[in-house]
Image 1 (cartoon, rainbow, N blue to C red):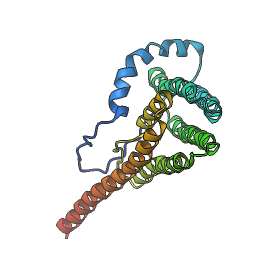
Image 2 (image 1 turned 120 degrees about the horizontal axis):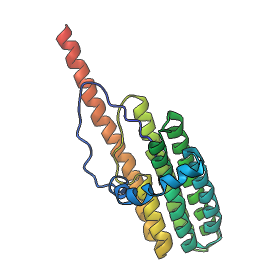
Image 3 (image 1 turned 90 degrees about the vertical axis):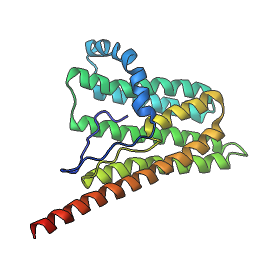
Length: 227
């Protein structure tokens, strides 16, 4: 999960943050203290934040193999462990002063591979079931949506527009998927992921539209005042 979010906000204006409830905001506070106790151990071991990112990714790949074999509940538990490493790398980076632009880029890139591996493993599993067509379609829709959630933010920030809203960001997707794997309610969970991930894309498109209009209006107003 994004270790260092690069917030790029157009100069000369302030827009209130979205009020949508997000696990990525509130859930991290819940896990912050327990994970913080592990940071000194990680620091003493000499492992780097990027090293933890790689470890978390390797655990996710192993989890993907387990999911592909059909052991969904076990895979859900393993994915929970991998997610903890994904959260711990950022805490270690901030605590040890190892924050870097490359670290943020590397972490986000590996996150995309990790999520893709997990979803494709589930596609492989459901492809072996006679009634797995619906699940496969939902998984592909979710995969496309998850990539677009990341792309819309990256493209917006490349244009100088802050874009961090949305009800179904990566932490939410991981938590909901883990819940589905462990409880066995996969089809309802896949419907939620497929729909809400793409709703998040729509939210971000609207956010960029709204923010860009404000910027353009302010720019036009400034130019008129100068004339």
